[in-house]
Amino acid sequence: MEGVDPTVPPSGTGCADCEAASPKGWWWHLRRCAQCGHIGCCDTSPSQHASAHAASTGHPVARTFEPGEEWFWNYVEEVKYDQGPALVAPTHRPDAQPVPAPTNRLPADWETYLHR
Image 1 (cartoon, rainbow, N blue to C red):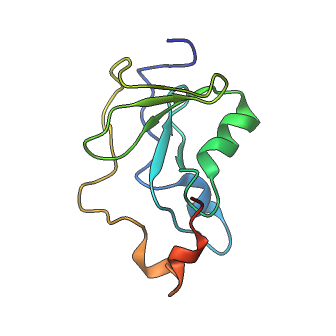
Image 2: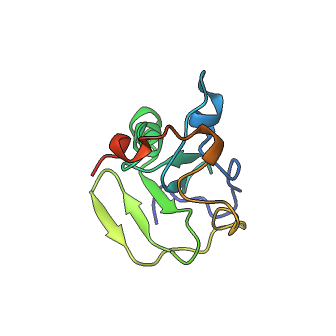
């Protein structure tokens, strides 16, 4: 699959851009760039960092970084693939990590910030 490097590990266990922001952000679900391993938040999340990463870098493919999911998304073609190449572990966020996360950064009205 073009735009996929299965040997690159994920950049961490949470959205790299939310972690780097000031103030730090929070996310709903996570996506992993299949080319460079960058972990970004999904398009339902307030900041939508995964799709912003794809647009700014030209890296076309992301894989879900959620437990129990294995699908890929091609941002250029706007196509979901139920399967793809095996990526180096870890393949999902820690099971103990809640959704949304991190909980200590959630505003009381966090649900109003989700994109649907």
